[in-house]
Length: 275
Length: 71
Image 1: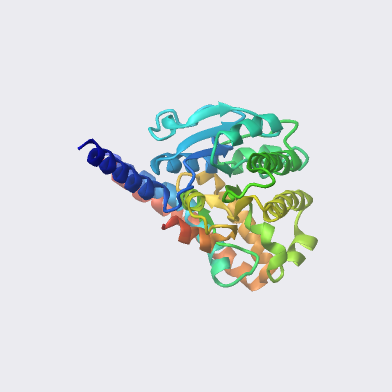
Image 2 (image 1 turned 90 degrees about the vertical axis):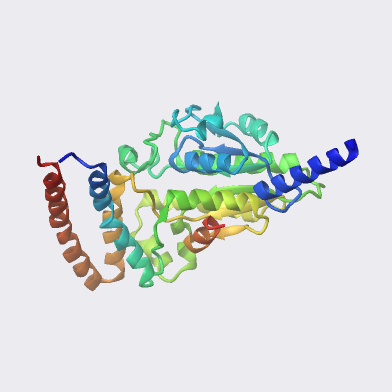
């Protein structure tokens, strides 16, 4: 009877594990999220918890950005500096997979650091050491080095899963007109930003021990991120101007309709508030 | 009548909505160096799917992210 009971429990456990983590027997269960308090990082943490993963979030702040969120309350929040190899090594050794979501658009050398208040989803501001090289390249290289050390040179284990948040523009050299845009029109800070992303991508692609998933999003937004609006519009105009001047004319006509739409909307809202 | 939250949400969405299609249209009409914008929920879902799926490796553009997010 006890044997039947044990077998039944084992079958149930396997079924639940498969449903939660996929078919692979070595599927990761413990995930570390570097930059877990950030805009993308916290969204990843939330979903990982929902999927049943054991999540550790590492960041400079080391605190839950949404204390009332029931999912994020289950995350282990760790304060740490990912530019420090020993900190990263300790975290990597305790986990089966890593997400790297550390990033900033304007580093300390860009001359535009205050704009991070507008474009950063989490409102994070860089400190004096926050260069693209430190924030993007060094932190990711630390993660890659720690993973490769953990796997060992002769290991026959499956590749270690590592997700990296890159940028769509890192792929400019691969698309028509992309190199021209970058070489002739992109500002220096953008070239530096993309350079660090590409250095990391090359590092990932060259590793035999890491399964690097490189996510290249364009602008990232959600319905609550209203403050990003002006930046997106300016960027759109900039990109479209490069492409087609006739398109710019259409775009301006389109933008001219926005104030009237907003005014109309506000009038409608006020109408609803009238007694 | 009272103020409806629903109206406030719509107003906020109007602030964002005019900007997003511009970027997305540029991508849709084939401007090769402009990619469609990605919602943070889509990106996060895609990353989570990428952790558990051994076949996910290399560059994931918005098309792959949208596909992964639906898994």
